Image (cartoon, rainbow, N blue to C red):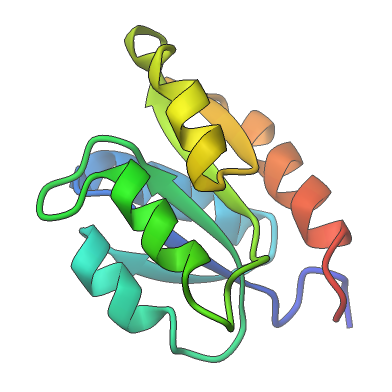
Length: 129
């Protein structure tokens, strides 16, 4: 069994093309992927077993990324699950809000697949199996 096997990544992104790019990069690194196109759907899917890290966009419909992070942090099961935020350079001012809400890391869009994979691997290594 490789370290990546059976490690789940929840990807929350309303842009289908970006969600597919993130999903491809994460799957290519050997992780299981669960996708959601918005915060409400993602909150429902958080109850699925095996989510070890969340990658979420800041700019989402229904629930924005900051509120999504707050709601995840209010759940007992995922209070300490790593959350990596996808953001653009123009959202740099939102980084502090994300950190205060409970985000653990950031990836700037556009990103290279290996950059995203490195961030995921770093946080997955910190999680118990």
